[in-house]
Length: 112
Length: 111
Image (cartoon, each protein chain N blue to C red):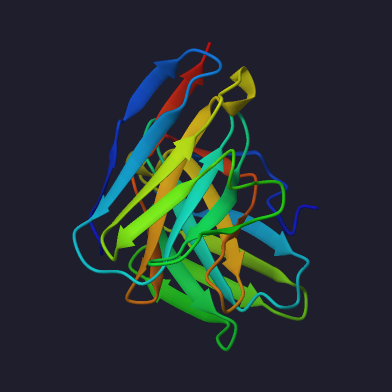
């Protein structure tokens, strides 16, 4: 399986600020995704991080709120912008490796 | 609209017995199904998957069964062990690898 790391593992942020989450994979992968798990909820896909082009966002998620970068095949960032308490969630990146999808450990974000 | 449903929020099973987790889906375009296990404060761990061209896939203690006509799949864990206590998520995707998740089932294995 692919080894995925995320930074930071957790953070507490004030409303109105932004946080950038990093995702690093130990091998080159074509497909990388960002998901969110709100408290007590299941996982929801935010966007597909496309290498060399703009991310593809799912319904309900927009680039201004969740800008994503994917400069190469092993790294991506997700920024949560102008945060509100409703953004308090676990944010996870995932990659497709050998036809299976693997998840990072997640970033637990609390917005106060 | 919830396309993947896990109708049992929790399951309690005695150590050594079988755990059976169920999952239903509504989207006929789904052709790949996965089960993940999640501990608190960790990311989901991939357990087992099944393609729509199969009706069973087995890996050690884990077996997944797929009934396409009923749009239903199940995960069997046998024998259940205390380390299996976790939240289990069913997920499904079409060809694009974009996963839709169920709400999860919390499994508690009693000693």
